[in-house]
Image 1 (cartoon, rainbow, N blue to C red):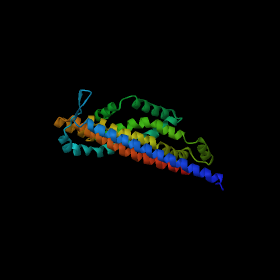
Image 2: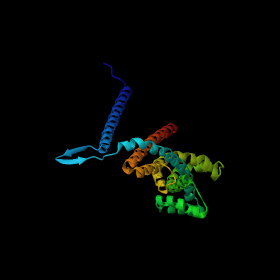
Image 3: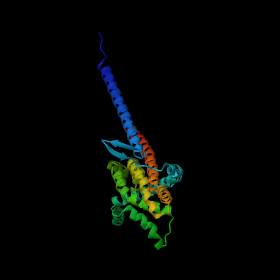
Image 4: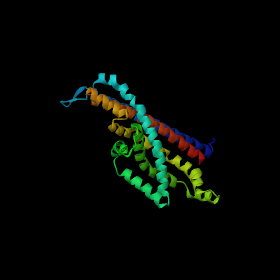
Length: 284
């Protein structure tokens, strides 16, 4: 009777273990999807207006005006595009400001370090809503007149740039110092080292957390609605809700759209992170 070589036995056992792990992962994913479906059904039922009793106690779910929802959802939906545009422009500005802030925080220049730390302290120490209102009310008194969209982008970009500065600084500092020393020994200037060695690697590392900031910004664009000059998602919902005395229905429509675009961009971010991790493993 012949027995398989040890290498073949180990390979077979490894395949069995991997197959078992894949089955467990599939079962777990199916269980999560089933739970999500049940929770979604429960959420829909909570707004069905149905009545039910438990132990002799009578309960009523939330009743909605579905006629209003059917006739006004598209007007509110059109605010999604401006919400996304606000977020994209703001995250671009925030990324640039966070890079400058991180370089200032890492600089040995007293003015650069002081300016960066003062900017971070001021922005992080005041509410975002106050900053939004400030740009709409204070800048015109200085002779600076911006459109509602421009002022909103400026407010969100400055706010998120302050918070993202630490993300960018951590990404820059994570690059191995030995690479900088090697580049310096080859005669590269500090600017060249930062541009060709440090920043390409740092930006790769900070893409996932910047994605998280972008998803949070999608929801914070709703604060721009307080100015009344930007017809984004929440502003449209409030307009229709007040005009028809159906604020609950209008805000629920906006909430659903916020949720949907958050899910879409979260899935997109997950794909980016997966590609980056695969690229990193192949490079290693």
